[in-house]
Image 1 (cartoon, rainbow, N blue to C red):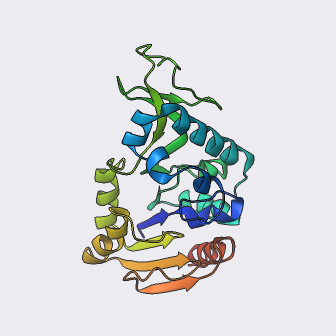
Image 2 (image 1 turned 120 degrees about the vertical axis):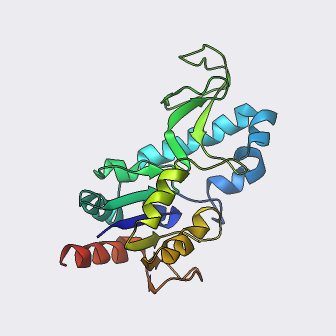
Length: 225
């Protein structure tokens, strides 16, 4: 069976990694338009780097939870594709075989002058030189609002070949990810949502609860088939 799994912020929220919808935490101290858009970076790159340095430290202090570990086990099964909107590395640290990061990765850096990518240090700054072209044009390798997500052709190909599409911990309101369930359903796949509460999307089945409980339970069910 071909299974495509899309995970969002709800997968990592119990591990202390917040989202821009949180009422407290990092996002309340940094306005979205100033730290998660190309325009914000152009206006104040130091502020943007400060924000992502804090997020990177938060990520590296966190540990994978039961949901990450369950998905990592499932990822080693033939036919399973893991796609995440998250920029953290908790699935990899849990041992996932491969993760498609459609919104990039906090642990990577990007040169917006030449396009080079490399492992990000713990702390980045506007005057950091690119290791490829030496220009001070480095930024976090994450997809900001107004930019095109990564790996879309690969993701869409997996969706149209899926037997089952599973959405985990995502609000289902931000496109293109919000359209994944419809694309999979149009191709004949069954669909399942695992979320703290139902998103209102058109899923064949919805299971509500914290990811740490409902994701391992679903994976155990799949493993038992």
